[in-house]
Image (cartoon, rainbow, N blue to C red; front, side):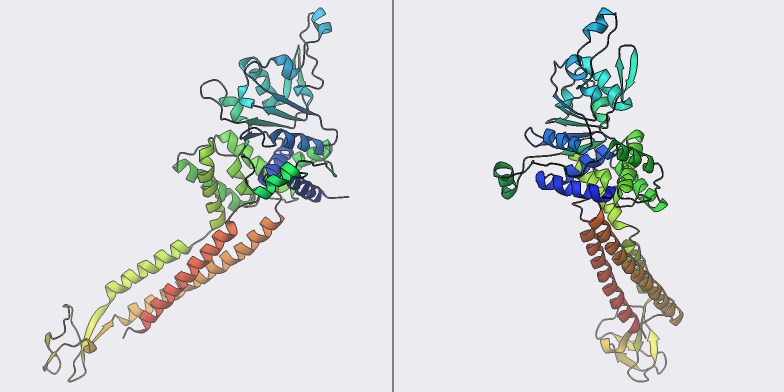
Length: 439
């Protein structure tokens, strides 16, 4: 029998083979289902949004699917079921919800932001609390996840802000771009997914229970807090509730891969959860990747230390001139020009200055102190470079096995950082050579 991890990996592979150029969306939508969260997909019609929702529902053993295209005139009967004539005769206002939205495990609501006021309150209650007010009863519904779709953002000031906010996961799609992929859709078997393995409601419940035991290590907490602070600096603000839901989403990622704690790779998933407007996606994604990729990178700090040391070093340097007659040194603070005449303080003989008579020097104690500083900084640099290389290997391995995170440049980012550290090593080498020339 397959483990949950193997089952999910096989399912993702089969889905991505059927839905070309939708690998990120497939993974994200499946994880949203496992986390019991809702996802909204923004993009033009005809981009396989409803088909993907239907196929996701088919993965759940005995899962009930409901889909509907909303309009400004959609009535509660169309979405929640017709009123029972028999109940009306008994002065009760009860709907026949079987085969309608309140009975579904997975629901696909196309043009979700066309929802009107007559259905909005019931829709919000169903989404938020997974309950439906049917007559005098407040019934629990089996809803796992809603996949909403729209080709436009919700209009402002028409009461849809609360509905939009309830979709934790947000994703944008477009038409297939690659010609070979288009051929698969037009002439091949793309979209013809048939599940070979199924998830049971019991397995989904097991994931929910496991999430409660997943830990957030202190180092990952710091990464998340740094991301939040950087976003706030740039006026990219997410609500406290969204952050809490997002962290639970990260725990689901860890739980489905049989991990005991959230990793910083899981944190990459925040790029789908924190943006409000599509134009914010790129910047928020960059903030997250930069912070996750950098780790405790100290190259800038080490470089600054080297620059400060160089500055102090140059301030402490003095020029000494060698008398060509008695070979004694004497210090001269004035600017030296070829041909200037000097009198040696020792032998009292005069000579005209030539550059070969000059050398740079500094107090021996200061020179030794500077050399020790450089040696310490160089050890720090080597340690940092070793840490980055180790982190690169770790991240490469984590990305290889990760079910949910793809299309990130963390390895390339770390390669770039290793290059920066190598250049910094060259600067250290040059400075050490300069120190050795001091008399």
